[in-house]
Length: 129
Image 1 (cartoon, rainbow, N blue to C red):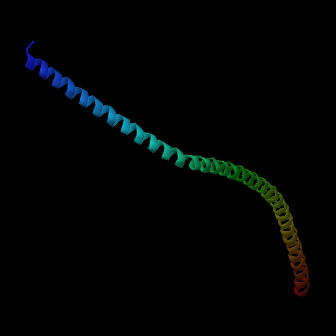
Image 2: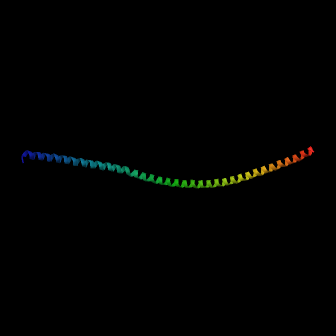
Image 3: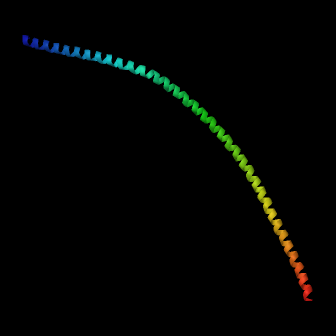
């Protein structure tokens, strides 16, 4: 093999070796930067995770309290429904009594009117005879 071919192959191998060394060097620097970034992220995430856990517990507590309040509102609503049912029965009974009172009043008025009519009719008949 001629000398110049060997020289070209040697130069190509050397250039390839330099490129490989530069790539390895760049990968090493990139790995160091990634490690530094991951360290920073880890330091930032620890307090955030703690806060997220605290917030989660707060949400659970609020959910429990809201459930209890909804149960109380349900109990109050049931009680109001019971009271409303009782009041409607009372009003229905009172309405029935009022209707009966009206009928008795009308009957008494009709009786009185009939008595007056009969009384006047008798007295008018006495004047004409």
